[in-house]
Length: 187
Image 1 (cartoon, rainbow, N blue to C red):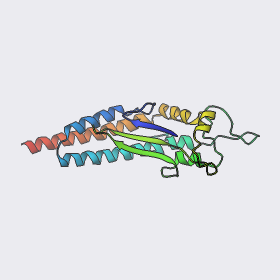
Image 2 (cartoon, rainbow, N blue to C red):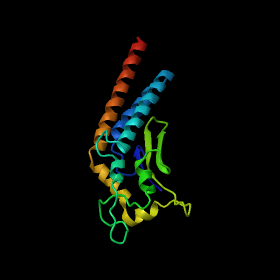
Image 3 (spheres, helix red, strand yellow):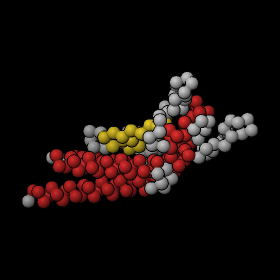
Image 4 (cartoon, rainbow, N blue to C red):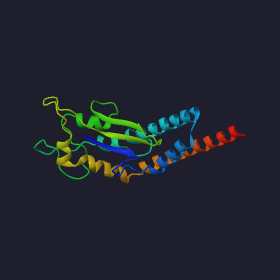
């Protein structure tokens, strides 16, 4: 199975939004009543939407889906060529669709909210071979290393920086609004 985590708990280069996660944790600590919790959930939903846009769409620049949409060329033998930056190896298209289409069969996109209010997203793909009934992502990844290569290329783009700035700004505004409302209520 192939996936990468974005946000708190990330082990890969996709953790470029830690500042925004810190702001969200601070917001979660600041909220205590039901109205505040509802505001936090709304902000988290907006954050998930922004992260999804960075993964599947061009809102912040080069997306992961755009990187994996590039198809690796084939040689005279009919096999995908070896080399860095050539794209996703495609035979039937199941593997590529699981990486570039959000709701494709066997695409991995999960979002979670931790107890401290931070958010986490898992992205990837793990198609099933219709003949054997087994997942087959591991074979092309071990042969070509295309997924790790794509993730590395993604981390070099400005996408995560722009996403992180937008998330931090959104969480900062939400935190300011919450503090201002709390002050008004206490008067």
